[in-house]
Structures are given as structure tokens and as C-alpha cells.
Image (cartoon, rainbow, N blue to C red; front, top):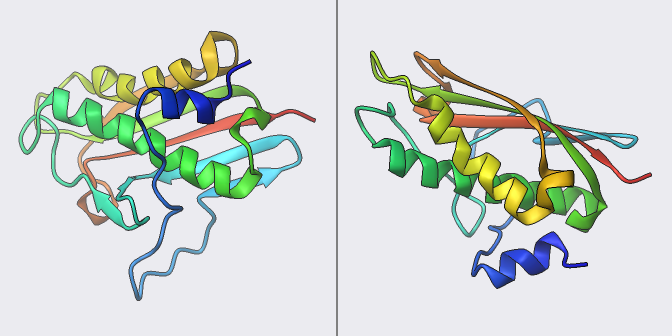
Length: 161
């Protein structure tokens, strides 16, 4: 069986380094919270190859197109996987993705949030396969997000015992 890490390499994708917070930023929570076989994933923005937070910033539908936001959502998926891998070791330990929740900072009248978050969902299903990667999902538009992020994606999954 091909592992998610092998599929990443086959597709020419690389995980960034785990998230590195900017100096002076204190977050009183974990990006990845493992409780037994259950994993809670806090809202993630996109990060650069070195683990630094790089956004994206602004409003989808005004500052960026749906297509640009969809690619950024895929990159947020890589960010989530980098932090998950740092916490659990091998991504093949994932038994199943349970839920994904995407928040998109949206321009007035913008209604394609579901298409934006497809960038994340499509990556997860591609890397983990339809049985493990299948998840429930919500995608909503919001007036604002912390640090002016254009989107933030969170989720839940279960690990193999």
C-alpha cells in the first residue's frame, strides 16, 4: 500500500516545516491535540517551507480569486499534514478523517466558500484515499479572521489503535 508520504512525493509536493510562531506571538493552545486515538486539529493558516506563517491574507472575492484561494486551501492542507506528522510520526497512522471545517474571510456577496475549501478536501482524499480521507465538512464565509487570514481550516481525525 502506498503511504500518504509516498503519494506526496509522487505528486511533487513537499510538507513545510512544522509551524514556527513569529517572535512575541503566544498561542495558549496546540495546533494538533492528540487524545488517545482522536486528533483535534486547530484552525490553520498557510505556512512557508520554513514553517513561518504566510497567510494568505485578505478577503476572498476581493483580494484573491476563488482559484487562488483554492490553491491556498490545498497548501493549508500541507501545513496541517506537516504539523500532524510532527505530532504523530507517520501519516499512515491515520485511520480516518472525520470532519473538516473551513472558514473563508469573504468579500460582500461572495458565495463560493465551498469551492475554496475543496482545495483542502481534494488533497486529503487524494493522499489518503476515499475510505480514509472521506470526511464530513462545512465551509462558511466570515467577516474577519485573526491576523487578517483569508482562511483558516480545522478538523478531526482518528488514529489507528
